[in-house]
Length: 427
Ligand SMILES: Cc1cc2nc3c(=O)[nH]c(=O)nc-3n(C[C@H](O)[C@H](O)[C@H](O)COP(=O)(O)OP(=O)(O)OC[C@H]3O[C@@H](n4cnc5c(N)ncnc54)[C@H](O)[C@@H]3O)c2cc1C
Image (cartoon, rainbow, N blue to C red; front, side, top):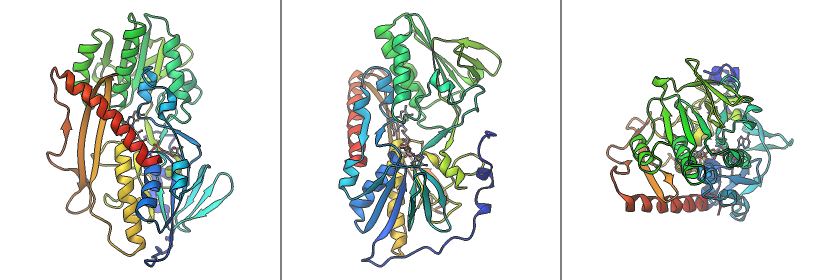
């Protein structure tokens, strides 16, 4: 565990004061649902709550006025999409009756059911949906801090898109013949196939614009999501361009030197590169850790049916911040579990049992601009309601083999997925 995680995270639930008794509302009465974080989990929750439970008064707290999605960010890095095409505003949610407050949640008081905002306002809630995403663990790789990220972008928490655009600009400015180095973390982290889609989209750009260049992907793992499909496609589309180095061949980066643009591995190999994309180890976002919701892992244990934090009644933690069992940390899972969390919160406010739960995931990856692959999974709580399990034979990955029409179609399905999920969140 990273020594920099606040001590509160380790102490977890033990420190909690007794909680206020949960409030029940009659069929006519309104109740206050507060949502923190306006990304995949939070925007999905706020929109769904207003559509499905109009008696919920919904407030969304999100500092940014424009949300740049991580999904399709790799296509911006590869020069296939523009950043405007993956940027969304909150007017659609306002039109649905959500009160949108652009501020940071600075502290949660679970006992009093109140959230303090950085701007000074305090918001009370009957139920809280918390979907603040991830924090990058600065310092977990020696030398990699916020200042280093200005030279070696992560582009893993897009914020206003600046990191994504920085990596894109560095690729454009790099001389032909340079090496692009990536440092890829161990599990768990946001979007398991994401680094490999990124490698692919960078390769597509280099093949087109800088064909003498190479990619060196240094990985802290020995295997990765959709590996066979990715590697087949790399051999087919980008032969000789990509070297992937797993941890058992000294792929684990432990130290970086942003000034010299050097990635150093655990056995002391120093790789000097022209562009470095460092994806550091991660944890739940700060607000979740400071509220004492996370365990020693840095992530938040939750009830698999209601997504209530194990450490605090009335706070449902969805999205990448929680421990999702076998489910990936994906935008689709954030969307799917946010709906279950809202429905459970609404049921509980009415004194009813939570609805039956099923969670869906499809992760598409672009390996080329018109070459898509996917992984699908369906998950549900086990019979005891104690853990989430994958429904047997419910999913799988795209078939391997020479299937150009399937790859072309999956790239168009990916576009349709992006349009429909972002409409579900923001329209
Ligand atoms: C390169 C890349 C590609 C990806 N591609 C895909 C894909 O194709 N398909 C897919 O399903 N997933 C994909 N993902 C994963 C997906 O982006 C995440 O799983 C998803 O964003 C998680 O949703 P979230 O709500 O937990 O976090 P986010 O979407 O990051 O939203 C968190 C929000 O909370 C806000 N916030 C944080 N702290 C506070 C606070 N204190 N107060 C108020 N607001 C706060 C942040 O500003 C942010 O807007 C990809 C990720 C990456 C990095």
